[in-house]
Length: 211
Image (cartoon, rainbow, N blue to C red; front, side, top):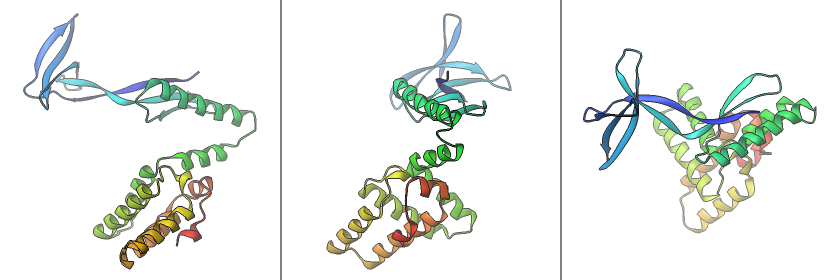
């Protein structure tokens, strides 16, 4: 049985913080944007006190079909939602063990359900590594995000050519420049052609329809 938890990390203590003690535990009290915060203290590697801060979202810990221990961010702030996501992943593991799914099927599904913003970030990193001009890369990412927002594309599996084609028609009718439309076509064509195949297949996206 897996579990969900908030990961902890440390941060420097603000210079204006006041150290207080409650029940034998030290806390730092300070103001952030006019509001008072009280955060537990821990000792850093060099013996200097640091703030002990919890992540705002939950991480799931479970074992995959091979028995390996997996830690995976749920991106959920609510514990109940995080546990539901953990249950989905554990069901996938059981289906792999039963032979209903293969590990490749699960990997494909995970890519397809990943947030588009995560794919955009990875795309930007790939383009930077390939020496893409910074201004062109920024314009490409801006175009991708605009279409995704307007077409309500949130995860890779949402992608379909039809909403994108309707978006192009609407831009034409609203007097949008040909440059804007061409940049959108080019941006999505490059993005889809450089995205891992398992994501495109899992989302049933045909690259040819977008170029």
